Length: 308
Length: 331
Image 1 (cartoon, rainbow over the protein chains, first blue to last red):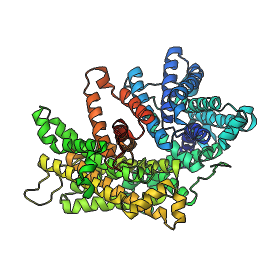
Image 2: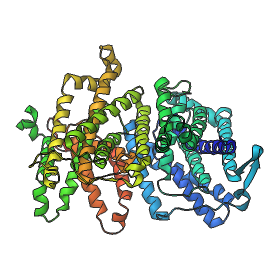
Image 3: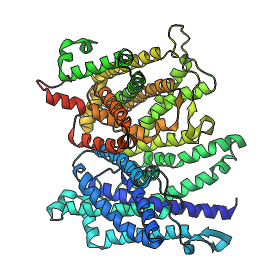
Image 4: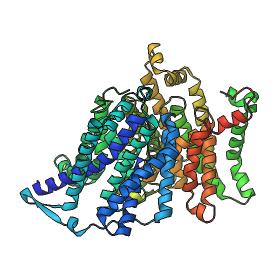
């Protein structure tokens, strides 16, 4: 086995895990606190990418693009919450699924109308574009390390926000018992709007920082949304810690599976069968993992305390 | 057959809507050429196939409370079984169809056993994830066309001279007959002791268990039946389109199925059929609009979906009941 390749793929998986965490954190927060299934969370990821692409085009600076796009995503999240989602809290999950499915159709088409069918790119500044030499002779792109750093920083920030600040206290109170928190004088409606704004910004941020590697395109949110669902389900709905650990797990396993599963299969299968089964099996790997975990722990690995 | 033939039941508002829809489907090969829009025969054939899928989903979602967001998986299994067998030269319907239905049942058993361990939103997400797993499998199957899909050169062959699916009209009325059969089977299931347990588990699972019913087993059986029915829709679709691609089992298809059920009226026997017809006619109408709306019909369709969810609870059948209510609906 080539250790350099192995280490590189591990880091790539870790980086995918960070992006997944940014989506899953918002998803799990919104579900844990508001009991809202939001399929359109992937649309926020896509909107973030397009916002950043446009700002990058206007300002010519990657950093400014992010600095402008994040508040824009908070604003977009708040507007979407107030117009479309607020009425859905009292509805059952089926209504929420359908209405947010309608939102996906709407946002995908809106994006096509505003930005056109072609993908949008965000050029990287020169100081982020190169590779850096890591120990053990690994050459790794700087920007992917930046993504990993951003993800870890956001995770740390979220932890501080939720466990150390007053708003975090309100979020925790709202998530363990909404009615009680409301009865004790917490303005639940405002809290929901703020939380959704945070979730939107996190998802949008994920879309922004991945775009320089890939590109912003219609439908980018749906592919990753399904993976984020797997993360949320494995981690335990409503648990940020669970989302963090499950995101890294899924990111690493998915990436490593795609690179090395066919090699592993060579040990048990003839070459042509392994070549055919490798890609098929590796694309199913995280779902098999999810099914396995749920079979033994239906509530996920880290169900939040006091979950209903 | 008592209720289907019962004149009283046909006189209820729902009954009238259902009768109109059945007549429309049954007579379309005559109506469409008469008004000079022959392509509507094709539109209706496709609509009826989706109606079968919607009827099957309604069985578990409307009556069993199992919100499956992965029902398209079974559609894909049915369609891909036909496609892959035809690809290897097996075109006999007597082989293809049983294999497709048994495969649907087996997958339904496995998926159901896994997802029924969970409830509520977990169930939604897990059915979605399991279906996506099959979607990715179909995408990675390079031998069978992966993303580009698989063209099916021969329709299923029953080996009976006068019953040849290559004749579009024969296929049309076969689809029509299967649709009616599925509605009839649903009606029998829903009103059977078995169906009563499933419906009871929807309204209060704990109480049904306390009464001594192993509800999970009942629900799993319903899940498998619905899977087989939806697999049948996939079998018909592969024959109609002579093509199958991963799109057939991608998650937007599952979402559309849920929408058809809700649009027509969840938990009403004929609602999903009405829902499928309205869904496809509306989509066809918007997509054929000249200019901006025709190019971007989803910009209307998405908000329409949200409005239906927010303001038309009970769907079209519920709406009809409320508009013309005398004593309530047929069920």
